[in-house]
Every structure is written in C-alpha cells, then in structure tokens.
Amino acid sequence: MKRQTHLFDAQNKVLGRLATEIATVLSGKDRVDYTPHIDDGGTVVVINAARVHLTGTKELDKKYHRYTGYSGGIRTITVKEQREKDAREIIRVAVKGMLPKNKLGRAMQKRLFIYNDAAYTEHIDVTHA
Image (tube, rainbow, N blue to C red; front, side, top):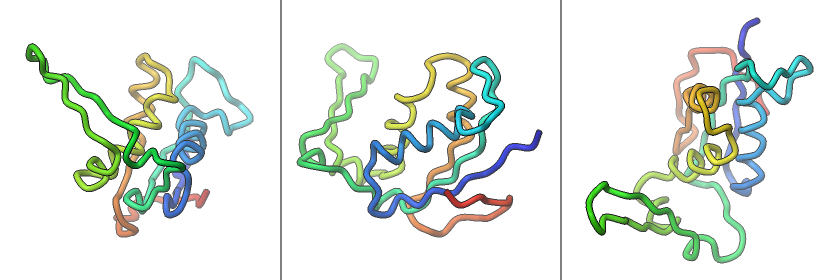
C-alpha cells in the first residue's frame, strides 16, 4: 500500500498538540489497519516551523540539553535561542519524544520533513491535515 503524505501548517499551533498529531500519523495509528510492529505510517511535511506557539513562559524557561562527549561538556540552550538558531529542531525533538525508542521509531523519524517557512518543493501528493 502506498504511503500518504500529510501536510501540517505549524503557524500559531501549540507545539505539544501539533507533535501528537504528527506522531500519530508517522506511527500509522490514524489508519484502520494499524499494527504496532509494522511501520506503515505516512510521510509528514511540516511548514512554518518558526511560527509554532508555546504556552506560558516556556519560550524562556524550557531548555534543551546536549552532551558534546567531553568532560563537563553539557550544553544548554533555551527555546528562544533554538528558534533563532534552527526552529525546525523544536518540532523534531518534540515529535521524537513521542515515537518508539527502537528501529521502528528511527524509521518513522526519517519520514518527517520540517521547513521553517511555507516554501518547500512539492514532489509528491499531499493530504492536508
């Protein structure tokens, strides 16, 4: 069966609610023939990632941590700083946390395409979600 491609517009959408919708489509749970051990979810294209909305004071309070591999090499960045650097990563991290932590989850992440603005190349049929 051919995978469907879903288009999500992140403009003025709340991050967590958008991420759950995306994770549902990537995992295939929106289909009637859903099977947990089979990767039959759709492809997701997200546009306007830079305009995603966070509630409350998360813009300054929420932090992303990464480890460089060196001793004392923990690096911390706020959502505001990450939005200026690369806003696509905000959505990518939120969706990644909602997918399985195994081979299936990694395969699902490869079908997630995020763009900061509304301009992207339409090379396949897109179902608006």
